[in-house]
Amino acid sequence: MPPTDDGAEPSGPGGQSGQLQLDVTTCVASQADVDRYRWIGSLIAAVASGDTALLKGSWLVQHCASADGPLPARQHCPPEAFWQAEELQKVVNISRTMQDPIAVPVVALSYCWETAEHPDPSGEQLRRVACAAKLCLQECADLAVFVDWCSLRQEPRTEEQQASFGRALDSVDLWYAHQMTWVWLLTSTPSGTIQPTYHERGWPYFERLVGGLHSHYDMLLDIGRPLESCSDYSDIRESCIASRCVPLTPDAFRAELASKVVARSEDCEFLAERYVHTFAVTIGPAESLCYANTGLSAAEAKLLADALGWCTRLLVLSLDGNDLGPEGALAIAAALPGLPQLQGLFANRCGVQRGGAAAIIDGVKETRRIGGMYLSSNGISEDDAAALEDVFLNRHPRSVIHVS
Image (cartoon, rainbow, N blue to C red; front, top):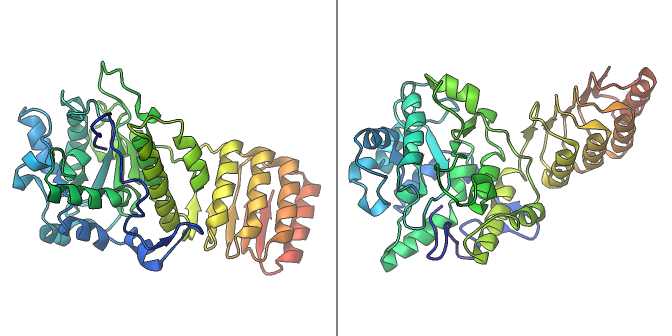
């Protein structure tokens, strides 16, 4: 994100609640706010407002190829660089695939600013983004790209431009957390820079975390990885899918954010508040959460279990193929009673073992409803499996359980 006057990253208007009608205390969003992060119309409306502009991927690639220097700030970009809301309405992609010859996917870029005056004065980061965009353009019509330097009005700003910048900043999470946007993480920093790394910074941490809250697993890509061997989008998808972080409760996010580098202390307050909003509109109303085969550890399972306390609409929780162990299973089991609509828990191949089975038995006793539980290949003995099945079916006689 753009820097403040005294550092390498921006601060937002701390204490503002943004545009969402949200009860921050209970972390519950209205249905209109939830829909805003699901339907493509909200992205079109953001462009139509004039506060945020989206670059054409084709123009970005052409600018890089022409050796015209680094990307210009928004006020200095030519009109043809941007999508107009009317034309975007006709072509923007509403599916979850890049491989569509008539598609125009929306991409949000998360990266580091190299200097306070310009995020990428050498153009090194531009070249990497252009490389990824060029490969994607082999398979889709164009891209609509959110790059803060070009998408938001930069300093010096007039009074009117400053107001526009503030409104855009209040909705900046929309571009990263929307269910229909791809998020590209440029985790590699320009060679020779001494600044904090991508993972040490507050704004990139926020962007990455909200970018993985409820997007499809292949819509979060780390283009900081080597791209030299990629020949098309399929190769990028194969080599650059980023691991998704488990959702953190707002309190846990605030605590972790305290260890990150930001330009001013107000940045932390702004990001923490935006995270509350984003968490509420994505995780709170989620009906399905999939963390299968993501390398989830027992410690991360505990963080996930804390977040599940807000998921009162959750129908399916998939944790297959993670090394949760008995401790992780204990944490998830303790969260089950707080999921009143859960229809399926998938925790096959999670190393649950005897201790985890016992914890799940205790959790099942407190659940009001669960449609099915799948716990195959977990090192659970026949006796423990039989005990778990007895408790589960006595509590939920019309449900299904698989334990082996």
